[in-house]
Amino acid sequence: MANMSPRQLALRNRIEGLIGVAAPFLDVVLGVGERISRIAEPTDHEYYPIRPGGRVALPGEPGYDAEQDLGAPIAEPLEPELSDPLADAAPGGQAE
Image 1 (tube, rainbow, N blue to C red):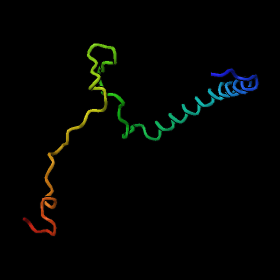
Image 2: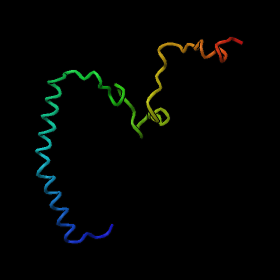
Image 3: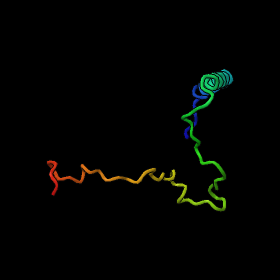
């Protein structure tokens, strides 16, 4: 990375200072918003956990399976798939 000029350093310091001053205010805004949302709807029916409940082995730990960690498990269908009687019919609605 190239060295920054004195003007760039001063601008970066100003921006970092503004972020430092605004951070507590933004934390309060987020906290108030969270409290309001919990009061308005105490139970979030659309929430689902990121990871399954229980102990999950992390990379580097015994029992970790990289193949299993590639994605979310595929859910089994609740009902067996039924064939579509219209799809089996020949074009024009006549059976063969």
